[in-house]
Image (cartoon, rainbow, N blue to C red; front, top):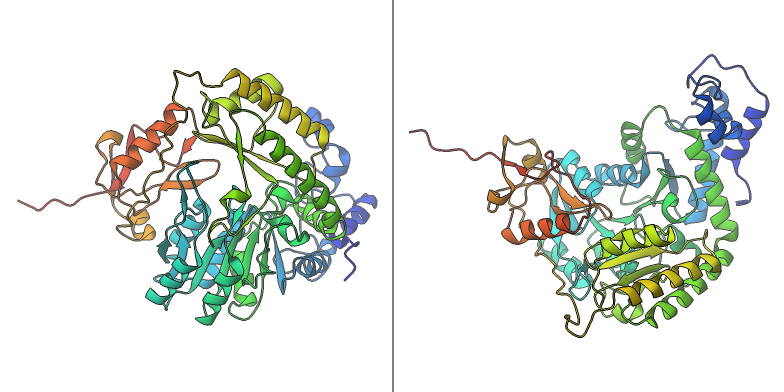
Length: 490
């Protein structure tokens, strides 16, 4: 297929050039019905293609024209049998993926360090998660992927599971041995679903971890907007037919997708696919070289450690994406969150993520040497300003809480009778809501899990550090929603 083509984006531009008179939504009518200052800032070109699914432009819910051709080109580019465009972000694609293979009561094998959207999909579908423990990196306070051995054990214990879901790569750039996991799961006729939110670029460079479709996975929810150049909220769901049904997936995707689909987002997916397919390999070679150079120079700064291939010690950390600069500040007298604020205030630098001990910076097609130089200058000053004195501890004590015990299914917990209890008095109760730090959006506690004192202390530590703890209905976290306990009638 001709990957130079952009049928959807080109079709939209051609339609807009005819300057039709709209008597349909959106009501701003090419910007004439909106606030002038916003119209001027956004620009007439963008507003001219903010359209709806009128006949000449195809319909995402029943594609047969421009969108159909654009999705076919994307499938060819990603090595899939079928590609769905998502305007609900990768969260929407993940929900579609899980709900396409699971119904109430079905088992799904998942790592515990999954994104909230996966747990939400499990609640919506009524599936029962079979949690696999990820490998914990206690030196840096993060979770990696899962081992092939743990997946084999989970399948042996639950051969009736409807799917295995894995993260590839993780937020921090580490990938498991995905190809072997696919082999293990397929031997049991179980499909493999991949949360590929942070791996759209992997399919377009041999220097990066293997992509989901290359590894033979059955479905992959992939964020094109995160690292592939499309607009925020635009993603794809790649599918290989066989163990999963494309037709059933189509029905689920339509159920979960707004009928007012954004053509601006869809067109950005079309253009991003073209750029990745035609220029991705060359551009990623440049980006990877930038990242390798940045990592080397960061590791030469006293007090910093930009982790990488030295962590490739198991099938859970089988490969590494060098474009993720995961920087440990453990030898400095500053937390990751404090460093994020310092970099913003001093240098106007915004990091991807900060936590108690680290910051994460991502290098993409949009970066060049000048931006890397600015980061290196800033990190050199940061390290010099917050280097620990001889009287201080050489290294902070990195805390990683134990994975909570799942007491009842997430769906049962979510829909149970509940009550609010004091945060400090909630240990031992079953939580009925999420608690997480976003980013990355991995729950510390999910509905149905047993609250432990250790988890509460970890939440408190994140709050005291100023990190964005989210999820509970009571945003102050003074109270948590838990399963109501029934007392015997006297």
